[in-house]
Length: 171
Image 1 (cartoon, rainbow, N blue to C red):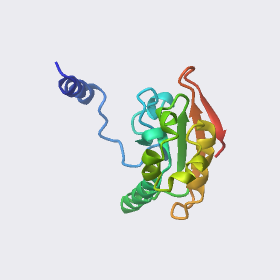
Image 2 (cartoon, rainbow, N blue to C red):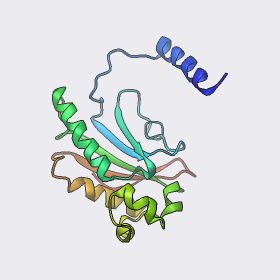
Image 3 (cartoon, rainbow, N blue to C red):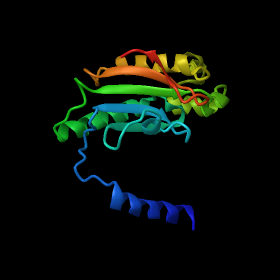
């Protein structure tokens, strides 16, 4: 059995045993977590979130890029259309982690410049090699985004060797 067949089979089990048709588009905890694609760091799993409690946006490094900012602004408009505006009462958590693969290419402006939509000489200011500093940078970017007023932003670093998160930037 291939991967797709295995996953489709697991979906049938999910649909039969754990599917909840009462979930709403707005997560119960009114929280969006921005995290990395690394399979060791599934934000819902490492934060103990139940199905329907949080929304998760994942990318390389879990970074707040211009694309992520646009995605959040678009998501806000979707939420407004569904009468659950992303604003006051919402939380956004930036979740970075130790041993992140993006640190292996921190000196590659040819890759990271386009990814962050900036000139390669500006890369050192993004702290790509330091997840704690990167969290602080990304939280600052979210807090200064004028199109997302009223959200509460915080930053965490997950340690892939202990399974624990550390609060780096308080909400």
